[in-house]
Length: 446
Image (cartoon, rainbow, N blue to C red; front, top):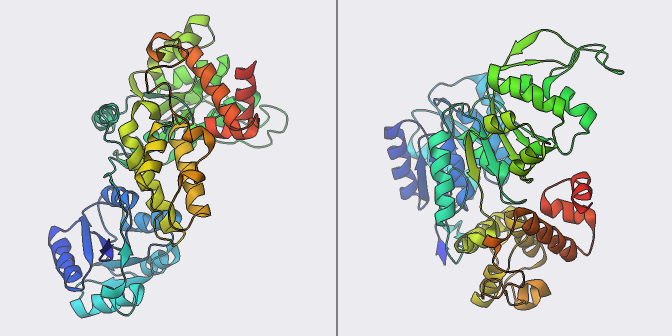
């Protein structure tokens, strides 16, 4: 199906949005309108957009930040800036960030048409985009999901995004724990402040404390100057600590103080510093079990777990699989300047029946690979044998019994074994699919 080229209009003025919308309709374009940058990013994540027209001076998050975000994440989408406060320095800055045109309000329809045609081509009505067949979901805070389990996740995110409560995001590898943390931050009143993600499992034990809290000169061999840590760098914003279960006892003690007292002490220092950081943590490990065995502090666990967001594995939200497939198909096809792949019903059924042990990350990587390797349609022959096989778990005959009657350790063990098998015992690839580092994988294999 063919459709008109789409234009995303971003302006905090309702009157200006309505005027731009009329201009776009007159040019044979399909306009989408938003009055803030956060909603604009959600529209961009949803699917194909051919052009963005944005104001610069907007409350909360500025148009300049949107230009920078588009340049980083959607480099093929041209950006046209319209501002009522012309400034040479601002113009130079946004052009450096990636804007291709800069107009000053009030702008006439003729001026706008000339600029749009320069960006999209000589005849805007002939610049046609290919639509994607199949269901397309509107992302919620940048996340796709219409299943009841994901709707509950969205409800919790909405209720907690604008307060300072600590959040613990739980779920299997690849379910999108960091995506949720970023969504909470960028849809909160802290969105203009830093968001820093730290993988505690990827930093050696002896360095983690220094990396988080900073160190003073002479704190250890090689510490030649004072150096701020992630807590200081994230001041005013959000710090996401992934694989928090890997934190040592010393780091756990300092984290407890940071959460309780809102202050930290640099390694080698004696003076406490106040910090204003919202802490979001995540873990693949069962922290309840770690508390029971004494490897994780109980008081810290309850502090971090004030709000819990549990992300279901993809096999428990199968109605979201077609939405995710079509989303990634459209996204990566657009990045490569290709038409989205056609996915026949038989292939889609096979992909829905597959267990996806690596969850959304595995699905995204698989669709990305298909977009690279294929040009028109996907056939059953393009699927690996594991995806073509019937799924005994969904047909009621799981050889290990009902997952609801099994321990988390048993499910995790089988999951790791399955991923290793699919990766042909390649531990590096298996760790990547699982979303953990090789060191963590080695410990789990022991």
